[in-house]
Length: 291
Image 1: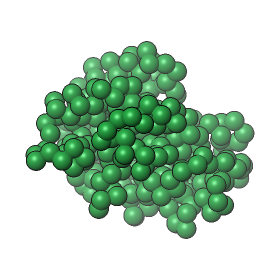
Image 2 (image 1 turned 30 degrees about the vertical axis):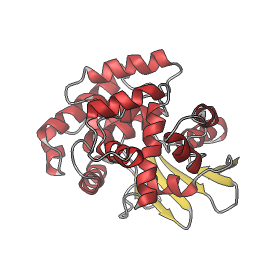
Image 3 (image 1 turned 135 degrees about the horizontal axis):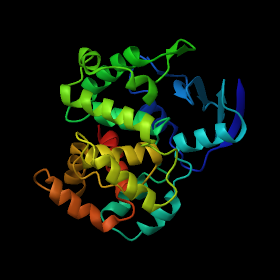
């Protein structure tokens, strides 16, 4: 195993990171135990086991069986959200009320990312208009169906090439609706044929181009696309106004008597450009703190 140690910034929330990756307690593709994440993924068509150990204060020891040096560092920094300019955001929010108090309470909050953009997009498709528990169960069966490899006792999260070999009936057998199966297959094949998902977004123009390309695919709407941009690339300005949890948290934050509509949520979020997705992440986190 190749390994490196990365210093964590002040206020980094290890719990938030591990909660995101440990949401499936059955641990098919990733396992969180004793402040250690083990995650099996398919990278560059190869099975990869990634380990992140948070037991040393202020550090994370990251190891991989295939990645080494700069590639391992880039993978870890992306997943941890260490490339996100949250200090600039927090300074910009200092004078805003009532959001400013929430941001201060949750200072240092970063958005954990999926291991790959394809994982983020496939999860967004699976999770459309169903509960998190139902989506997690479908995701688990999907991984078992599509995963070509197992490493360290975990099934590697499949890449687009593996998924493109499936058919709609196979996906429906593990819980996909007909429309979701068609969308995932279309996305997977376009990833293979046209390189739909770049490795990284280097500018707002890249993000806008990808948003346009994804929205042109039948079955992908604004929520799925902006969720993918956030979790797959750490893009912090997608508008998640259609997210029910964001609407619920906004209702509580502002003391409204009823849940805001998607339009009202969008209109409220627009004032926080270019940080709308990060604001949504703070709203998500506020629900966890109140639970």
